[in-house]
Image: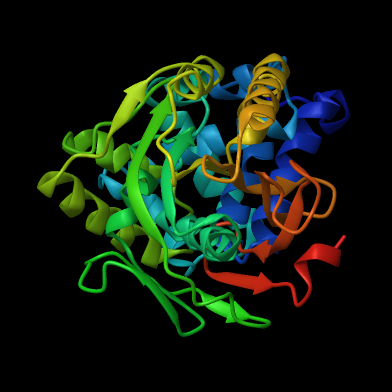
Length: 365
């Protein structure tokens, strides 16, 4: 039988990491996932191997996503049918936190060895809905820099959003992309509409340090495991992405993010096409030295940019103080602002359910 540790002897930082992640999920309309994450406090307080690993965790910053690693493993047990006891948790039928704690702890005890490897690496998330913010950013940039773009994504995971040139977008009634696509991106739109600009994406490519092959059925299930169970439409989007990848695989390279950005920035740029670096909910996972290298590489390239060979950076990333996900752009030459100055266009749901567009983005901050 498991022996229990007294609550006041549990590592404070690990507890705070779990509580922070649960609150983050709750604030982003994911109460089921929030309850699963909170149940990890019961796991941490047990003498299971997973519990010991959580107690000994060295990096418990939110950026390390420790709670979401184990949550992914638990969701995988549910999705593969390996653990029937989790079904009422993931359907929301079981909502009492104490009862969820009991179920999750019992499941961890019985699947301890299988769950342990899920703690070895960060979540691999790839959400097509986030591409709505990226497309909105392109719509805003197009009248300022020109309609033609070549896109480069870091942290591309399975490369779903490197296929965004094949998505159909409806952004508050402003349509873009491939109208007949099986991947339909239709977020709730709040605020004024984005400009109805012409956007031509000439090429999209991406990189990831550990890319996922959508042609591998098990890899696709693993990717689904990191999807928050509350957002069932996200599962359907992964299925649509698999269909698109089967028709034509995404252009995806295995590479360190900073190395890859530096390499494509060194290639001569086509005239009349804006080169764009983009990413979504990725920046927080990069080591600080990599962040600095990418920033410096973009600024050096920005200094060489011109009106007929522009450069832009579009990102949807988390403000960890406000829990908001901010859509930001910067460009060289600057779009109505000094070269390279960030402009906040709006905020968005973590998984693309809605976008709130600012009425006056140039003065939003």
